Image 1: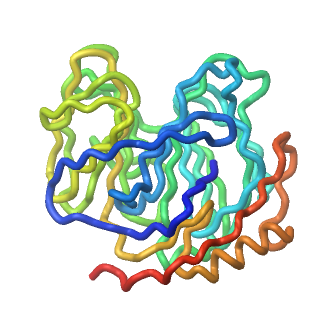
Image 2: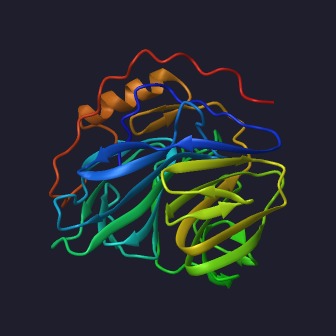
Length: 313
């Protein structure tokens, strides 16, 4: 998916536990309505997570199918968690991969890759997903591009919740997706009343996004379309619900580097984005995505981005 933010985005952090509510923003990506939780003016990152879209749920036959034509990325990983429906991923490495419910696609852009995402044809049923971006640290952001598909993820039952470990370690389980910063991601699903105490790492910062139903986080009610940023310094988290609900918990070590985020690029200097924009529009560097029925996107001009500030100590 693409990002149409028109301002640079820089890392931020918070020391100690907080309960900070951040409203998501409605948008449309490739014909699919989404709720954008990251980045916002209030919260730009959670660990290395620098982007979070809740896509759908929508009826795939209602004209809201996903069609995002070929577009480039640098300096990040795209992380797609499929909940309902099917999406076909195609990229410049030659991968053509259908992602189904309960699966993850992880694409590492590194020095440059392009891909397209199209709803599987014929469009039937519902479409529901969460897509996140992970900023690559300086030592890894120029690495060769790569793509991995993870059809099986660890699942545990805890207190009435079915917990899928998406990335990192939780409840004694380790998820296979390969990332380059200390991160964790979990999906919690309950069909009825449930309660679980989630072990946390005190040096991580965390956030929760409810996807459906209503949950209580440390006793505080939370509904969809609000990201609850929890800060750091916590060793556990009380999650509960009185009826069916679904939520995603993300976390990671605060990202110790300043980044610039524009369109589909994560970089450190405006000149890097200008070069990536020119290279894509001139059909250089990234290669071509074959097989997508959607038109190739044009990279917009880079605005006047100010240089990033010195990194956090």
